[in-house]
Amino acid sequence: ATKPDGGRSGSIVAPLVTQQEFQKIDVNPPKGTRDFPPEDMRLRNWLFNHFKEVSRLFGYEEIDFPVLETEALFIRKAGEEIRDQLYCFEDRGNRRVALRPELTPSLARLVIQKGKSVSLPLKWFAVGQCWRYERMTRGRRREHYQWNMDIIGVPEVTAEAELISSIVTFFKRVGITASDVGFKVSSRKVLQELLRKYGVPENLFGRVCIIIDKIEKIPVDEIKKELGLTGISEDASEQLLKVLSVKSLDDLEDSLGGAGEAIADLKNLFSLAEKFGYSEWIQFDASVVRGLAYYTGIVFEGFDRKGKLRAICGGGRYDRLLSTYGGDDIPACGFGFGDAVIVELLKEKGLLPELRQEVENIVCALDKDLQGAAATVATALRDKGQTVDLVLESKPMKWVFKRAARVNARRLVLVGKTEWEDGLVSVKVLSSGEQFQVKLNDLE
Ligand SMILES: OCc1cccc(Br)n1
Image (cartoon, rainbow, N blue to C red):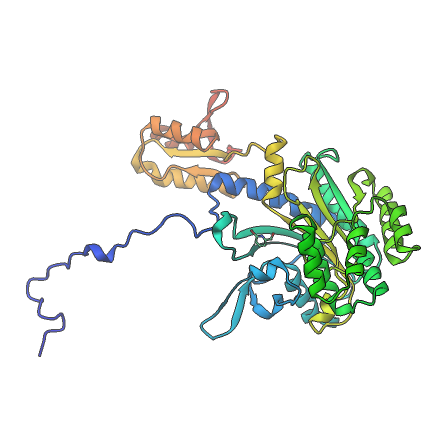
């Protein structure tokens, strides 16, 4: 019988780890994704903390959901880009799943799941990573983080007015002003009223909006062709495109032949903007449609007034989304705010914060048999809530001073043999050079 180790026993020779067992890996993250090393993570935390603090300022509650959802949650037959780029696959249980491309469908799912156990209105916020699978021809990102705030259960335009106020609050907190950024505001009820006027069936509404949203991205003949494919008459298409170039609410009222819901909503929003104190930030712009099929009313998007960047954020009312998932007919509105364009804008405005690592103390034993004592000192400081970088091995002082500078320590705490016997440690304040000895318990 062969020996258990295939005949190599006797002189036990540790088998060499042969080369093929090490396979050099690609240390870069997958295409279109990012790592967040400390300096990038500090900026991300700074940004997300502002998102979350503003949300809490407005009384919203934080929620979260899985980045993985069933694919069906995002399958809408409206020709949206977000659908074409869905990061979807079949899992090991042969389930069709997708990495979420946005957060709103998950929020809708959670509201329906909670059903009668939650009382309306709900004011929820989330900051979550969203994904798209785009051929990397354009070298664009496949993931970004989105800040969302949503109000569920309020049909009035006060909801949209408050959402815009929260974004304005964020901009002001990071130093962006109304001369840097504005909001284009419109209402899809304009398109809805026109489609009804031309007898276009309701079920085409989402699709038509997605086509119209491409107005500045593809030639107008292509837009007309795609509208024609939905069965809309040439005349109706002309009218739809004409209304998008309307420059004022009064002109819109004229072109719609009287004040319908769309005009009433927009007038109400503009008067509320005055009361919230952000009138200078918003303007009516009939060409804003947004690229998500489920919006049904007010839509808005934040833009940089220099026109150099893509939309900073966007949102609107989506009163039908919950019922399309089999939920009750609950009105809702919200926005999404990505983590990419805002950083480009802050960079351009010179508003990116200088964020350094900060540590109050670097603790170091002066010889290796005091390493335990140094651990005691570190723990005592940490128990007082003080941040400590503990030098974990015996190092020359030159090394310690270099590390103290690198971690931006405020002071150096040295544990020396003679002082420690008297319960003392030596402290050196690195900015002033001030030096003193102190009893460990008195070290604040
Ligand atoms: O803005 C659309 C979008 C969705 C998911 C991921 C990325 Br990057 N961008």
